[in-house]
Image (cartoon, rainbow, N blue to C red):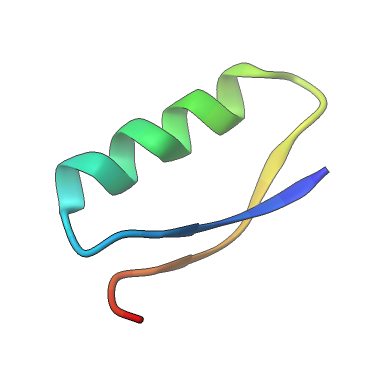
Length: 35
């Protein structure tokens, strides 16, 4: 599954990105730092 990450806090974005990538069947489709 491709997942989009949206958060305005860089630390939270990195945490979510790593969490998604730690699950082998998922990947980050895009990242937005504002909404």
